Image (cartoon, rainbow, N blue to C red; front, side, top):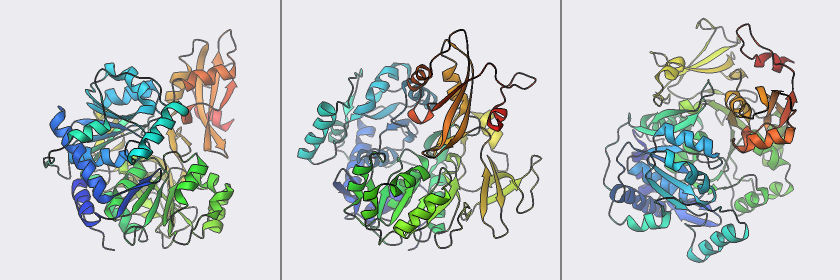
Length: 535
Protein backbone atom coordinates (compact mmCIF):
# COMPACT_ATOMS: atom_id res chain seq x y z
CA UNK A 1 0.00 0.00 0.00
CA UNK A 2 1.26 3.46 -0.87
CA UNK A 3 2.43 5.52 2.08
CA UNK A 4 0.91 8.98 1.89
CA UNK A 5 2.85 12.03 2.97
CA UNK A 6 1.15 14.27 5.52
CA UNK A 7 2.53 17.63 6.59
CA UNK A 8 0.45 17.69 9.78
CA UNK A 9 -1.32 15.17 11.98
CA UNK A 10 -4.59 17.01 11.32
CA UNK A 11 -4.25 16.08 7.62
CA UNK A 12 -3.61 12.46 8.59
CA UNK A 13 -6.70 12.31 10.79
CA UNK A 14 -8.95 13.99 8.23
CA UNK A 15 -7.87 11.57 5.52
CA UNK A 16 -8.24 8.50 7.76
CA UNK A 17 -11.70 9.47 9.01
CA UNK A 18 -12.93 10.00 5.45
CA UNK A 19 -11.30 6.92 3.97
CA UNK A 20 -12.12 4.41 6.72
CA UNK A 21 -15.38 5.79 8.05
CA UNK A 22 -17.16 2.45 8.32
CA UNK A 23 -14.12 0.44 9.41
CA UNK A 24 -13.76 -0.76 13.02
CA UNK A 25 -11.30 1.65 14.64
CA UNK A 26 -10.93 0.88 18.34
CA UNK A 27 -12.27 -1.91 20.54
CA UNK A 28 -12.12 -1.94 24.34
CA UNK A 29 -13.95 -3.97 26.99
CA UNK A 30 -15.86 -5.76 24.25
CA UNK A 31 -17.23 -2.65 22.51
CA UNK A 32 -16.10 -1.46 19.08
CA UNK A 33 -16.23 2.08 17.71
CA UNK A 34 -15.86 2.74 13.99
CA UNK A 35 -13.62 5.45 12.59
CA UNK A 36 -16.79 7.38 11.80
CA UNK A 37 -17.89 7.25 15.45
CA UNK A 38 -14.43 8.32 16.64
CA UNK A 39 -14.57 11.16 14.09
CA UNK A 40 -17.95 12.36 15.37
CA UNK A 41 -17.06 12.22 19.06
CA UNK A 42 -13.63 13.80 18.64
CA UNK A 43 -15.29 16.58 16.60
CA UNK A 44 -17.68 17.18 19.47
CA UNK A 45 -14.85 17.26 21.99
CA UNK A 46 -12.97 19.76 19.81
CA UNK A 47 -16.16 21.88 19.64
CA UNK A 48 -16.51 21.80 23.42
CA UNK A 49 -12.90 22.92 23.87
CA UNK A 50 -13.32 25.77 21.41
CA UNK A 51 -16.73 27.04 22.48
CA UNK A 52 -17.01 26.30 26.20
CA UNK A 53 -13.50 26.88 27.56
CA UNK A 54 -10.93 29.68 27.46
CA UNK A 55 -8.40 27.42 25.70
CA UNK A 56 -6.67 28.77 22.61
CA UNK A 57 -4.60 26.96 19.93
CA UNK A 58 -1.15 26.28 21.37
CA UNK A 59 -2.41 25.86 24.97
CA UNK A 60 -1.45 22.60 26.66
CA UNK A 61 -3.92 19.89 27.68
CA UNK A 62 -2.81 17.00 29.90
CA UNK A 63 -4.39 13.60 29.21
CA UNK A 64 -4.17 11.17 32.11
CA UNK A 65 -5.87 8.06 30.76
CA UNK A 66 -5.02 4.37 30.27
CA UNK A 67 -5.92 2.48 27.08
CA UNK A 68 -9.65 3.16 26.96
CA UNK A 69 -11.95 4.33 24.14
CA UNK A 70 -11.84 7.79 25.71
CA UNK A 71 -8.17 8.21 24.84
CA UNK A 72 -8.47 8.46 21.01
CA UNK A 73 -11.63 10.58 21.31
CA UNK A 74 -9.96 13.09 23.62
CA UNK A 75 -6.60 12.97 21.81
CA UNK A 76 -7.95 13.59 18.32
CA UNK A 77 -10.43 16.18 19.57
CA UNK A 78 -7.69 18.16 21.31
CA UNK A 79 -5.48 17.97 18.20
CA UNK A 80 -8.35 19.20 16.03
CA UNK A 81 -8.81 22.13 18.42
CA UNK A 82 -5.15 23.06 17.90
CA UNK A 83 -4.03 22.19 21.44
CA UNK A 84 -0.68 20.75 22.51
CA UNK A 85 -0.91 17.29 24.07
CA UNK A 86 0.82 16.51 27.39
CA UNK A 87 0.69 12.73 27.84
CA UNK A 88 0.46 11.97 31.56
CA UNK A 89 0.93 8.58 33.18
CA UNK A 90 -2.15 7.54 35.23
CA UNK A 91 0.22 5.84 37.70
CA UNK A 92 1.97 9.09 38.63
CA UNK A 93 2.17 10.05 42.27
CA UNK A 94 0.94 13.51 43.28
CA UNK A 95 4.54 14.76 43.30
CA UNK A 96 5.24 13.54 39.76
CA UNK A 97 1.94 14.88 38.44
CA UNK A 98 2.50 18.28 40.01
CA UNK A 99 5.89 18.63 38.34
CA UNK A 100 4.54 17.78 34.90
CA UNK A 101 1.48 20.04 35.13
CA UNK A 102 3.50 22.98 36.43
CA UNK A 103 6.38 22.56 34.01
CA UNK A 104 4.14 22.24 30.95
CA UNK A 105 1.86 25.07 32.02
CA UNK A 106 -1.12 22.84 31.21
CA UNK A 107 -4.43 24.72 31.31
CA UNK A 108 -6.68 21.66 30.99
CA UNK A 109 -6.70 18.10 32.28
CA UNK A 110 -8.65 15.02 31.24
CA UNK A 111 -8.38 12.46 34.03
CA UNK A 112 -9.73 9.00 34.85
CA UNK A 113 -11.85 9.03 38.01
CA UNK A 114 -9.79 6.15 39.43
CA UNK A 115 -6.74 8.43 39.79
CA UNK A 116 -8.42 11.84 40.08
CA UNK A 117 -7.70 12.14 43.82
CA UNK A 118 -4.04 12.88 43.15
CA UNK A 119 -4.95 15.52 40.58
CA UNK A 120 -7.40 17.13 43.00
CA UNK A 121 -4.63 17.30 45.58
CA UNK A 122 -2.17 19.23 43.41
CA UNK A 123 -4.36 21.22 41.03
CA UNK A 124 -4.52 24.39 43.16
CA UNK A 125 -0.75 24.72 42.64
CA UNK A 126 -1.05 24.63 38.82
CA UNK A 127 -2.49 26.70 35.95
CA UNK A 128 -5.15 24.09 35.15
CA UNK A 129 -8.55 25.77 34.76
CA UNK A 130 -10.55 23.10 32.91
CA UNK A 131 -10.96 19.60 34.37
CA UNK A 132 -12.81 16.81 32.55
CA UNK A 133 -13.34 13.59 34.51
CA UNK A 134 -14.26 10.26 32.93
CA UNK A 135 -15.15 6.86 34.33
CA UNK A 136 -13.94 3.57 32.84
CA UNK A 137 -17.16 2.69 31.04
CA UNK A 138 -18.29 6.13 29.88
CA UNK A 139 -18.14 5.36 26.13
CA UNK A 140 -19.73 1.92 26.35
CA UNK A 141 -23.41 1.28 25.43
CA UNK A 142 -25.82 2.53 28.16
CA UNK A 143 -26.51 -0.73 30.01
CA UNK A 144 -22.91 -1.89 29.89
CA UNK A 145 -21.74 1.58 30.91
CA UNK A 146 -23.86 1.49 34.08
CA UNK A 147 -22.72 -2.03 34.87
CA UNK A 148 -18.99 -1.41 34.35
CA UNK A 149 -18.94 1.91 36.19
CA UNK A 150 -20.95 0.42 39.04
CA UNK A 151 -18.63 -2.55 39.43
CA UNK A 152 -15.50 -0.38 39.31
CA UNK A 153 -16.84 2.11 41.85
CA UNK A 154 -18.91 0.07 44.27
CA UNK A 155 -17.67 -3.51 44.08
CA UNK A 156 -13.97 -3.06 43.30
CA UNK A 157 -13.94 0.26 45.18
CA UNK A 158 -11.37 1.51 42.68
CA UNK A 159 -12.57 5.14 42.62
CA UNK A 160 -11.30 7.10 45.63
CA UNK A 161 -13.11 10.20 46.79
CA UNK A 162 -12.00 13.47 45.22
CA UNK A 163 -13.27 16.98 44.75
CA UNK A 164 -12.43 19.64 42.18
CA UNK A 165 -13.41 23.28 42.48
CA UNK A 166 -14.75 23.16 38.92
CA UNK A 167 -15.05 20.08 36.74
CA UNK A 168 -17.44 18.27 34.42
CA UNK A 169 -17.74 14.77 33.06
CA UNK A 170 -16.56 13.78 29.60
CA UNK A 171 -20.17 12.91 28.75
CA UNK A 172 -21.23 16.46 29.64
CA UNK A 173 -18.41 17.91 27.54
CA UNK A 174 -19.44 15.84 24.52
CA UNK A 175 -23.08 16.88 24.96
CA UNK A 176 -21.99 20.54 24.89
CA UNK A 177 -20.05 20.10 21.65
CA UNK A 178 -22.98 20.65 19.28
CA UNK A 179 -21.47 23.22 16.91
CA UNK A 180 -19.05 22.11 14.18
CA UNK A 181 -15.48 22.80 15.34
CA UNK A 182 -13.65 25.70 13.73
CA UNK A 183 -10.68 24.83 11.49
CA UNK A 184 -7.32 25.62 13.09
CA UNK A 185 -4.21 26.84 11.34
CA UNK A 186 -1.50 24.29 12.11
CA UNK A 187 1.71 23.93 10.15
CA UNK A 188 4.48 21.31 10.12
CA UNK A 189 6.47 23.41 12.58
CA UNK A 190 3.50 23.77 14.99
CA UNK A 191 4.01 22.10 18.35
CA UNK A 192 1.85 19.00 18.79
CA UNK A 193 3.19 17.10 21.77
CA UNK A 194 5.12 17.67 24.99
CA UNK A 195 6.33 14.16 25.79
CA UNK A 196 8.07 14.05 29.14
CA UNK A 197 11.33 12.18 29.52
CA UNK A 198 14.38 12.20 31.71
CA UNK A 199 16.53 12.61 28.60
CA UNK A 200 20.19 11.92 29.34
CA UNK A 201 20.31 13.82 32.64
CA UNK A 202 17.45 12.34 34.66
CA UNK A 203 15.60 15.65 35.10
CA UNK A 204 12.06 15.34 33.76
CA UNK A 205 11.81 17.48 30.63
CA UNK A 206 9.19 17.93 27.92
CA UNK A 207 10.48 16.94 24.48
CA UNK A 208 8.87 19.32 21.98
CA UNK A 209 7.57 17.26 19.07
CA UNK A 210 5.92 19.02 16.14
CA UNK A 211 3.30 17.99 13.61
CA UNK A 212 6.16 17.65 11.12
CA UNK A 213 8.22 15.45 13.47
CA UNK A 214 5.43 12.97 14.06
CA UNK A 215 4.05 13.01 10.50
CA UNK A 216 7.55 12.31 9.16
CA UNK A 217 8.07 9.42 11.57
CA UNK A 218 4.75 7.87 10.54
CA UNK A 219 5.95 7.77 6.94
CA UNK A 220 9.40 6.53 7.98
CA UNK A 221 7.99 3.65 10.03
CA UNK A 222 5.48 2.57 7.38
CA UNK A 223 8.15 2.74 4.67
CA UNK A 224 10.65 0.70 6.69
CA UNK A 225 8.23 -1.92 8.03
CA UNK A 226 6.65 -3.03 4.77
CA UNK A 227 4.29 -5.58 6.34
CA UNK A 228 2.80 -3.13 8.82
CA UNK A 229 -0.87 -2.56 8.03
CA UNK A 230 -0.40 -3.93 4.50
CA UNK A 231 -4.15 -4.32 4.11
CA UNK A 232 -6.96 -2.22 5.52
CA UNK A 233 -8.58 -3.21 8.81
CA UNK A 234 -5.76 -5.40 10.08
CA UNK A 235 -6.18 -6.24 13.77
CA UNK A 236 -3.60 -4.73 16.10
CA UNK A 237 -3.08 -5.59 19.77
CA UNK A 238 -2.49 -2.36 21.71
CA UNK A 239 -0.77 -3.57 24.86
CA UNK A 240 1.64 -0.67 25.39
CA UNK A 241 0.02 2.42 26.94
CA UNK A 242 -0.94 5.07 24.40
CA UNK A 243 0.64 7.74 26.60
CA UNK A 244 4.02 6.09 25.80
CA UNK A 245 5.63 7.68 22.71
CA UNK A 246 6.07 4.36 20.85
CA UNK A 247 2.42 3.35 21.20
CA UNK A 248 1.28 6.95 20.62
CA UNK A 249 2.98 6.97 17.22
CA UNK A 250 2.53 3.37 16.13
CA UNK A 251 -1.06 2.84 17.25
CA UNK A 252 -2.39 6.37 17.59
CA UNK A 253 -1.04 7.58 14.22
CA UNK A 254 0.48 4.87 11.98
CA UNK A 255 -2.33 2.36 12.53
CA UNK A 256 -5.02 5.02 12.10
CA UNK A 257 -3.47 6.23 8.83
CA UNK A 258 -3.96 2.71 7.47
CA UNK A 259 -7.42 2.02 8.89
CA UNK A 260 -6.24 -0.68 11.28
CA UNK A 261 -8.47 -2.13 14.00
CA UNK A 262 -6.89 -1.38 17.40
CA UNK A 263 -7.74 -3.70 20.30
CA UNK A 264 -7.07 -1.61 23.41
CA UNK A 265 -5.74 -3.45 26.47
CA UNK A 266 -6.31 -1.28 29.57
CA UNK A 267 -4.14 -3.43 31.85
CA UNK A 268 -1.72 -5.86 30.14
CA UNK A 269 -0.69 -7.28 33.52
CA UNK A 270 -4.18 -8.80 33.82
CA UNK A 271 -3.37 -11.76 31.58
CA UNK A 272 -6.82 -13.46 31.73
CA UNK A 273 -8.49 -10.20 30.59
CA UNK A 274 -5.75 -9.70 27.98
CA UNK A 275 -6.37 -13.14 26.46
CA UNK A 276 -10.14 -12.64 26.59
CA UNK A 277 -9.80 -9.38 24.66
CA UNK A 278 -7.72 -10.97 21.89
CA UNK A 279 -9.54 -14.30 21.60
CA UNK A 280 -12.21 -13.18 19.06
CA UNK A 281 -9.58 -11.83 16.64
CA UNK A 282 -6.71 -12.91 14.43
CA UNK A 283 -4.11 -10.34 15.37
CA UNK A 284 -1.73 -9.28 12.60
CA UNK A 285 0.55 -6.93 14.59
CA UNK A 286 1.78 -7.32 18.13
CA UNK A 287 3.98 -4.74 19.85
CA UNK A 288 5.37 -5.19 23.35
CA UNK A 289 8.45 -5.04 25.54
CA UNK A 290 10.45 -8.09 26.54
CA UNK A 291 8.77 -8.47 29.95
CA UNK A 292 5.29 -8.73 28.41
CA UNK A 293 6.46 -11.16 25.74
CA UNK A 294 8.03 -13.23 28.53
CA UNK A 295 4.83 -13.24 30.60
CA UNK A 296 2.67 -14.25 27.64
CA UNK A 297 4.77 -17.17 26.45
CA UNK A 298 4.60 -18.61 29.96
CA UNK A 299 0.81 -18.24 30.19
CA UNK A 300 -0.88 -21.46 28.94
CA UNK A 301 -4.03 -19.85 27.52
CA UNK A 302 -1.98 -17.53 25.31
CA UNK A 303 -0.85 -20.49 23.22
CA UNK A 304 -4.49 -21.24 22.36
CA UNK A 305 -4.90 -17.98 20.39
CA UNK A 306 -5.03 -17.98 16.58
CA UNK A 307 -1.72 -16.66 15.21
CA UNK A 308 -2.40 -17.49 11.55
CA UNK A 309 -2.57 -13.79 10.57
CA UNK A 310 0.33 -12.56 12.75
CA UNK A 311 2.70 -10.87 10.31
CA UNK A 312 4.79 -8.63 12.57
CA UNK A 313 5.93 -8.72 16.18
CA UNK A 314 7.85 -5.63 17.21
CA UNK A 315 9.75 -4.71 20.34
CA UNK A 316 11.40 -1.61 21.72
CA UNK A 317 12.24 0.02 25.02
CA UNK A 318 14.49 -2.82 26.21
CA UNK A 319 16.46 -5.67 24.70
CA UNK A 320 14.61 -8.89 23.87
CA UNK A 321 16.31 -11.88 25.47
CA UNK A 322 17.34 -14.78 23.30
CA UNK A 323 15.11 -17.25 25.13
CA UNK A 324 12.03 -15.05 24.79
CA UNK A 325 12.65 -14.44 21.08
CA UNK A 326 13.05 -18.16 20.46
CA UNK A 327 9.94 -19.22 22.41
CA UNK A 328 7.79 -16.48 20.84
CA UNK A 329 8.72 -17.63 17.35
CA UNK A 330 8.06 -21.28 18.27
CA UNK A 331 4.57 -20.43 19.58
CA UNK A 332 3.47 -17.82 17.04
CA UNK A 333 5.60 -18.59 13.98
CA UNK A 334 6.54 -14.89 13.86
CA UNK A 335 9.98 -13.46 14.74
CA UNK A 336 10.31 -10.39 16.95
CA UNK A 337 11.73 -7.35 15.14
CA UNK A 338 13.68 -5.03 17.42
CA UNK A 339 14.12 -1.33 16.84
CA UNK A 340 15.58 1.73 18.48
CA UNK A 341 14.42 5.22 19.22
CA UNK A 342 13.92 7.81 21.89
CA UNK A 343 11.19 10.14 23.05
CA UNK A 344 13.21 12.97 21.52
CA UNK A 345 13.04 11.34 18.07
CA UNK A 346 9.27 10.73 17.79
CA UNK A 347 10.54 7.92 18.52
CA UNK A 348 11.85 5.62 15.74
CA UNK A 349 15.39 6.07 14.36
CA UNK A 350 16.42 2.52 13.53
CA UNK A 351 14.48 -0.70 13.09
CA UNK A 352 14.81 -4.19 11.75
CA UNK A 353 12.97 -4.31 8.42
CA UNK A 354 10.29 -6.96 8.89
CA UNK A 355 11.40 -8.72 5.73
CA UNK A 356 15.01 -9.21 6.89
CA UNK A 357 15.36 -9.04 10.67
CA UNK A 358 18.78 -9.69 12.20
CA UNK A 359 18.41 -11.05 15.76
CA UNK A 360 20.51 -9.24 18.34
CA UNK A 361 20.55 -6.00 16.33
CA UNK A 362 18.32 -2.92 16.29
CA UNK A 363 18.27 -2.96 12.48
CA UNK A 364 18.97 -0.22 9.95
CA UNK A 365 18.08 3.50 9.89
CA UNK A 366 14.63 4.48 8.69
CA UNK A 367 14.40 6.69 5.58
CA UNK A 368 15.77 10.26 5.67
CA UNK A 369 17.69 9.49 8.87
CA UNK A 370 21.43 9.98 9.26
CA UNK A 371 23.35 8.05 11.91
CA UNK A 372 26.88 8.62 13.14
CA UNK A 373 28.94 6.65 15.66
CA UNK A 374 31.54 8.92 17.26
CA UNK A 375 34.27 8.77 19.88
CA UNK A 376 34.60 11.10 22.88
CA UNK A 377 36.18 13.76 20.67
CA UNK A 378 33.23 13.65 18.25
CA UNK A 379 35.19 11.87 15.51
CA UNK A 380 33.55 9.11 13.48
CA UNK A 381 34.77 5.64 14.37
CA UNK A 382 35.35 2.69 12.06
CA UNK A 383 32.58 0.08 11.53
CA UNK A 384 32.62 -2.45 14.37
CA UNK A 385 34.03 0.05 16.86
CA UNK A 386 31.83 1.32 19.71
CA UNK A 387 30.93 4.97 20.05
CA UNK A 388 28.08 7.30 20.92
CA UNK A 389 25.15 7.12 18.53
CA UNK A 390 24.21 10.48 16.99
CA UNK A 391 21.13 10.99 14.81
CA UNK A 392 19.76 13.62 12.47
CA UNK A 393 16.45 13.61 10.64
CA UNK A 394 12.99 15.15 10.33
CA UNK A 395 11.76 13.23 13.38
CA UNK A 396 14.22 14.87 15.82
CA UNK A 397 12.56 17.18 18.36
CA UNK A 398 12.75 20.97 18.42
CA UNK A 399 14.32 20.79 21.87
CA UNK A 400 13.26 20.59 25.50
CA UNK A 401 10.40 22.80 26.66
CA UNK A 402 11.78 26.01 28.22
CA UNK A 403 15.19 24.39 28.82
CA UNK A 404 17.69 25.95 26.44
CA UNK A 405 20.79 24.70 28.28
CA UNK A 406 19.54 21.12 28.40
CA UNK A 407 18.66 21.34 24.71
CA UNK A 408 22.14 22.62 23.82
CA UNK A 409 23.70 19.67 25.65
CA UNK A 410 22.09 17.13 23.32
CA UNK A 411 21.26 18.99 20.09
CA UNK A 412 23.97 20.83 18.15
CA UNK A 413 23.62 23.67 15.66
CA UNK A 414 23.71 21.23 12.73
CA UNK A 415 20.76 19.24 14.05
CA UNK A 416 22.70 16.23 15.35
CA UNK A 417 21.06 14.69 18.42
CA UNK A 418 23.35 13.01 20.96
CA UNK A 419 21.56 9.92 22.21
CA UNK A 420 24.02 9.07 24.99
CA UNK A 421 23.81 5.41 23.91
CA UNK A 422 26.85 3.41 22.84
CA UNK A 423 26.46 1.44 19.62
CA UNK A 424 28.40 -0.21 16.82
CA UNK A 425 27.70 -0.31 13.10
CA UNK A 426 28.21 -3.76 11.63
CA UNK A 427 29.70 -4.23 8.16
CA UNK A 428 26.25 -5.22 6.84
CA UNK A 429 24.81 -1.83 7.85
CA UNK A 430 22.87 -3.13 10.85
CA UNK A 431 23.38 -1.46 14.23
CA UNK A 432 23.74 -2.94 17.68
CA UNK A 433 23.46 -1.21 21.05
CA UNK A 434 26.34 -2.28 23.30
CA UNK A 435 25.62 -0.05 26.28
CA UNK A 436 22.99 2.41 27.38
CA UNK A 437 23.15 5.78 29.01
CA UNK A 438 25.58 5.42 31.86
CA UNK A 439 23.20 5.46 34.77
CA UNK A 440 19.68 5.07 33.41
CA UNK A 441 17.78 1.97 34.51
CA UNK A 442 15.22 0.29 32.25
CA UNK A 443 12.36 -1.40 34.12
CA UNK A 444 9.89 -3.15 31.79
CA UNK A 445 10.72 -0.63 29.08
CA UNK A 446 10.27 2.43 31.29
CA UNK A 447 13.13 4.78 32.14
CA UNK A 448 14.13 5.12 35.78
CA UNK A 449 16.61 7.84 36.61
CA UNK A 450 18.77 7.35 39.73
CA UNK A 451 18.77 11.06 40.60
CA UNK A 452 15.03 11.06 41.17
CA UNK A 453 14.96 7.89 43.30
CA UNK A 454 17.97 9.04 45.33
CA UNK A 455 16.33 12.41 45.90
CA UNK A 456 13.19 10.75 47.23
CA UNK A 457 15.08 8.25 49.42
CA UNK A 458 17.21 10.91 51.07
CA UNK A 459 14.06 12.79 52.08
CA UNK A 460 13.63 10.06 54.71
CA UNK A 461 14.86 11.58 58.00
CA UNK A 462 17.04 8.56 58.85
CA UNK A 463 18.76 8.12 55.47
CA UNK A 464 22.02 10.05 55.24
CA UNK A 465 23.13 9.13 51.72
CA UNK A 466 21.70 7.09 48.89
CA UNK A 467 22.81 5.72 45.54
CA UNK A 468 20.79 3.83 42.94
CA UNK A 469 21.85 1.39 40.22
CA UNK A 470 20.11 -1.13 38.01
CA UNK A 471 20.61 -4.85 38.52
CA UNK A 472 19.50 -7.71 36.22
CA UNK A 473 15.96 -9.01 36.74
CA UNK A 474 14.33 -11.98 35.01
CA UNK A 475 10.91 -10.33 35.47
CA UNK A 476 11.51 -6.72 34.41
CA UNK A 477 14.86 -6.71 32.59
CA UNK A 478 16.36 -4.56 35.31
CA UNK A 479 15.37 -3.78 38.87
CA UNK A 480 16.14 -0.76 41.02
CA UNK A 481 18.73 -1.35 43.74
CA UNK A 482 19.13 1.28 46.44
CA UNK A 483 22.28 1.64 48.54
CA UNK A 484 21.75 3.61 51.74
CA UNK A 485 23.87 5.05 54.51
CA UNK A 486 21.68 5.50 57.58
CA UNK A 487 22.08 7.43 60.82
CA UNK A 488 21.84 6.02 64.31
CA UNK A 489 18.65 4.08 63.54
CA UNK A 490 18.83 1.29 61.01
CA UNK A 491 15.65 1.89 59.06
CA UNK A 492 13.91 -1.41 58.16
CA UNK A 493 13.84 -2.29 54.46
CA UNK A 494 10.04 -2.39 54.32
CA UNK A 495 9.88 1.12 55.79
CA UNK A 496 12.22 2.49 53.11
CA UNK A 497 10.26 0.79 50.33
CA UNK A 498 6.94 2.05 51.72
CA UNK A 499 8.39 5.57 51.98
CA UNK A 500 9.46 5.46 48.31
CA UNK A 501 6.17 3.94 47.16
CA UNK A 502 4.26 6.93 48.53
CA UNK A 503 6.33 9.26 46.33
CA UNK A 504 7.22 7.24 43.23
CA UNK A 505 5.41 5.35 40.47
CA UNK A 506 5.57 1.61 41.11
CA UNK A 507 8.24 0.75 38.54
CA UNK A 508 10.62 3.32 40.09
CA UNK A 509 10.37 1.90 43.63
CA UNK A 510 13.55 0.08 44.79
CA UNK A 511 13.23 -3.69 44.89
CA UNK A 512 16.54 -4.30 46.67
CA UNK A 513 18.02 -2.36 49.61
CA UNK A 514 21.66 -2.64 50.64
CA UNK A 515 23.05 -0.91 53.72
CA UNK A 516 26.52 0.61 53.56
CA UNK A 517 28.73 2.42 56.07
CA UNK A 518 29.84 4.72 53.23
CA UNK A 519 29.49 5.14 49.48
CA UNK A 520 32.37 5.40 46.99
CA UNK A 521 33.06 8.98 45.97
CA UNK A 522 35.28 10.93 43.60
CA UNK A 523 37.81 13.47 44.82
CA UNK A 524 35.15 16.17 44.57
CA UNK A 525 32.61 14.16 46.56
CA UNK A 526 30.47 12.81 43.72
CA UNK A 527 29.05 9.36 44.44
CA UNK A 528 30.50 6.86 41.98
CA UNK A 529 27.65 4.64 40.82
CA UNK A 530 30.04 2.97 38.39
CA UNK A 531 32.01 1.47 41.30
CA UNK A 532 28.81 0.18 42.87
CA UNK A 533 27.90 -1.50 39.58
CA UNK A 534 31.38 -2.97 39.24
CA UNK A 535 31.23 -4.37 42.76
